Amino acid sequence: MTTTALKRYEYHPYIDEYVRMVEQGEIESCEEQKLLVAYVRRTLDRDDVIIHEEEINKSVEVPERYFPFSFYPWQRFLNALMFGVRFADGQLVWNEILILMGRGGGKTGYMAADSFYMATGHHGVRNYDIEIVATSEEQAERTFRDVHEVLEDKKQTNKLKKAFKWTLTKIQHKNTRSIIKYNTSNARTKDGKRAGCVIFDEAHEYEDYKNINIYTTSQGKVKDARIIYTTTDGYVRGGPLDDLKEKARMVLHGELEDIGFLPFICRLDHDDEVHDEKKWEKANPSLRYNKELFAVIKKEYKNAKLNAALWIELMTKRMNRPQEDVRREVATYEDRLATDQPLPESLKGLDAIGGVDFADVRDFCSVGLLFKSGGKRYWIQHTFIHHLALKLQDINPEIINLAKEKGLSTIIHNDKSIDPDRVVNWYLEKAKTFNIKKVAMDDYRSRILKPKFEEAGIEVEIVRRGRITHSKLSPMIDDMFINQTIVFHDDPLMRWYVGNVYKDFLGNDNIEYKKIDKEKRKTDGFFAFLHALNLDHELNESLPLNKENVKKIFRSFNV
Image (cartoon, rainbow, N blue to C red; front, side):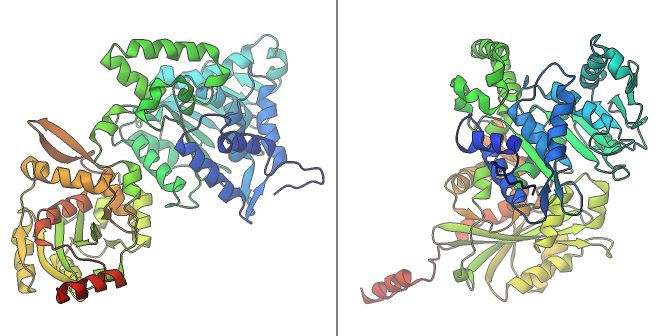
């Protein structure tokens, strides 16, 4: 960390300013911003992280000489983290950045200014191309056009002509040879990129990774390569933005570490906050500096109260509170996090019900055990993953790697399929510790699995799946998550499974749990859990073995 005799700040003025604003409540900020500030503090306090003051200053001062605006505090904060924070070996600490905030926050102009700065080479890298990508040409061109207009400005043209040459489609810095271009996401024509920085504008519009991968898989050939996603929330569920939001949650809550990901998420914490205009700043930290934008949103709010379609648009794009997620999610992220509670020693020897979900022999297979003790239910699971599933499907690699590290999954490389004996053997191993009464599964794989289990002496019960069964289980599932009486222990894979399921309301009080996405949003662990819950009534409530409960037991004998 840079230090001087006259230093009166903790990290850097740009960092300290925004940290103070969030921590001391000088601005309205959402839970993600508070977690981000804590995450940044933890990172900057590391011995192997160095803050480069001069690089931070240049990243703001250079573009502000030419662009017709000054950076907002949140923009200065992000620039400091993106350009001025490195590990001791010179590598960037954060090279993947998500900026998710309400529409009108100034993301386009901000990215234009940073693109200009990166092209000039003041950050120390030549041939550093900047690719601005969006799903439509008009959207992709907006950031490029902002840079182009700065170059065309009559007051600056003569000076900038010495440094740049430009057309309507390409801007190049003469000295660094760095190029700024805009692209629509077309996988057929964009292969072989060597970009220094890729900016994905309005990332909520992407339905899959096909076009994103064209730009990201070729990175690593240029020093200090960066990926930046700028977006509001949107209507595509199960796409890359949902993956980014999930990764952000895991990073901010400490489940994923040291992956170079910096999530800057701004949104309302609760839907009801939309009725308090002071809270709108949570979704858009630029709002206090832009009275015109505030007036526009105020008018939109009044109109939206009279129109359901406008209300959904306001909540999704201005407040980053997509209504579909809130209405249909199985459990809030906070309630999913609350499943990370310790497994008591008293579970040893208790009765348990097993649950298996085994859809395809070359896909995922989840196995688990359900317990009831001390007013809570406990679920421990393991997932067998065939390696072909990871090659053929767009599955979030971070969660798979994390599950493997924690011993929650086994990747099967050498076998042509997932051998049913692996499933049975898992239960036989657990039977050394727990009393497994039955194992529940649906009919799909029972012809293969049931004889194997019976041969091993484990009883199998076939359970139904679908709307009738799910409608019966739904009240119990809701109660467990809302009252936080379901425990998965330290199992991010199981929490991911739950987050990949939505409740489909079919009418007549019928509910069915369904996958958000047919392939990459895996749900095997959740459905194994559902299978076991079908036999929940066969588990007797067990009290934890502690002094108070032992006394109760002895008192009952003396009655």
